[in-house]
Length: 125
Image (cartoon, rainbow, N blue to C red):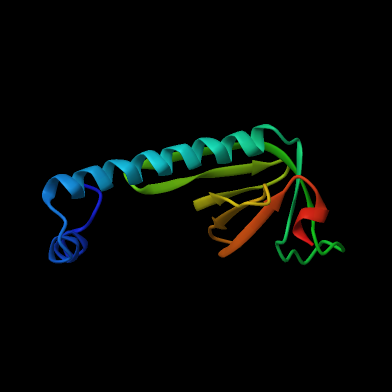
């Protein structure tokens, strides 16, 4: 089951039965899988993206990145992967699609921050 023991106990205390917990767990796993696919599709659909990442070597408030690929996997309710640009790559986790069509990911070591990516700079303004 996706929920840890403490969460399961709290949900049972709130009135959920084991079948309810299983159904919720399955729903979380499916939602994470759908989001991972949508994130990969976003990066597959755009050769170039822009971000709100603070980059020391960029003059732009919204630097441009040439996308090579995104490889995002899921395990239960967790999402992790690798985002590769033309000259560098970064570990990613916990991504989501935002209502404005941009995406947000937590980028791992060297960046260690939550970063938004969009198909154009206007979306990030």
